[in-house]
Image (cartoon, rainbow, N blue to C red):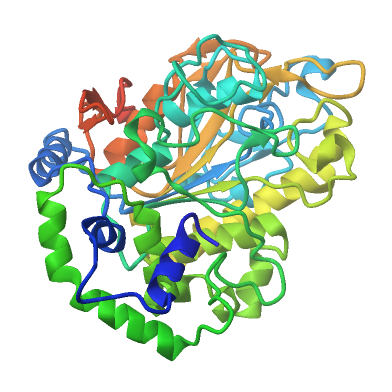
Length: 474
C-alpha cells in the first residue's frame, strides 16, 4: 500500500465514527489538509516570460528520465573513439547516424537513426567515481560532501532535493496523480540496503517527496501498486465514503486556511484519488496497450516500466524517472551497468540491445502520439567508465568525463555539445556540470534556474545554480 494509505482507509471505514458531533480538529486536518506547492503563479509566469525573451520558450509539459544506474560507458555509446588503441576503444566499432558526421557505437543501430531528434552531451563531469555520491550530483546538481564516498546515506549536509522532488514542489498534481513518480525500484547500493542520498525532498520536507513505486509492470495481471481495496471493501462502499469526504470539503478547507501547522501527508489524499478510479487508475492499466506496442517496448521489467512512464505522463504526471533494473542477477555484474567484469559480453549480450530498443521505441512512440515536442526525454547515468579495461575484462567507474543525451521537449536534435579528449578520459571542450544539465531541464519545463522554493524553515533557495545550455535549445 502507499505510505499512510492504511491509516486513511481505517479512518474512513471504522465503525462508530461520529461524523457530525465529536470530530476533533485533528481529525478534520487528517481528513482534509493538502500540502501546498512551492511556487506562486506570478513566479511561474515570470519564468515563462523570461524563456520567451531569450528566444527559447519552454515547451515541455513532462519529462521522462531514463536513469541507467551503474554507469553507462561513453566509449561504446555516444562518444566512441575508433582511432584510440584497442585497450581504449574496446571491442566494438562505430556506425554512422542520421546526423551527417556524427558516429555512435555500433550497438546502437536504432538510436543512430534518430539522432536528428537527439542532442548529445559528450563533456559531462562530476569528478566523482562513487555510485551514490556521483549519483547524488546528477540527481540534485550539487556535489556531495565529500566526493567519492560509496554507500553514502541521505542526511545533512547532503540533503539537497532531487529534480523529482523539486518538480513535485513546483508543479501541481493533475488527474489524481502526483507531479513526480520514480519507478520501478529505489536507487540504492548493495541490493537495496543503502539508499542513495539525493533521491528524496531533503530539506524541502517530506510533503514534496516524489512517489517511489516498487513494481514490475511486466508481471501478469499487473495493477496499480497498493491500489487494491482492503478485504471486504467494495467499490460501492468506497464511493459512498468518498462522497462523504467531498461533502466535508468546505469546512475542511476553511480549517486548513486557518491552520498554522498541516502535518497531514498529501500521499494519503493522492492515494484516495488513485483508488477512486478515473484517469489515474486507468494510467496503470498497462494491459490496455496492444500486444504489438508491449512487444516493441520489450517484454522486460525495464521495458514495460518505460511504457508505464509514457502512460503516466499522458495521464498528467509531470516527471517520471525510470531506474534501470537487472533482468537476471545471475549474469556478470548482477546483470547491470556496473561492468567491472566481462564488459563487452554484458554490453552486447543484453544491456545495449535492451537500451537501444526501448529508448528508440519511446522516442518514436511519443512522436507518433504527438507528444515528443512536449515531452523531454533524458538518457542519463551517474558516471561513465574508465578509458582502459581492467584485468577482469571490465571497465571501472569514471566521473571525469562521460556522456548523456536529451530528446524532445524543446531540445534541438542533431547536435553534439562539448567534447572529450582522444581517449574519452577528460573533457576537451565545454565541460558540463550536473547543475547545468538540470538547469536546462528546468528551463524546458518553464522554470528559470533562479526560481525560488522554500525549505521547511522558510528559507528561500534557487532551484538550480547551473546555467542553461542555450545551444541545446530549439
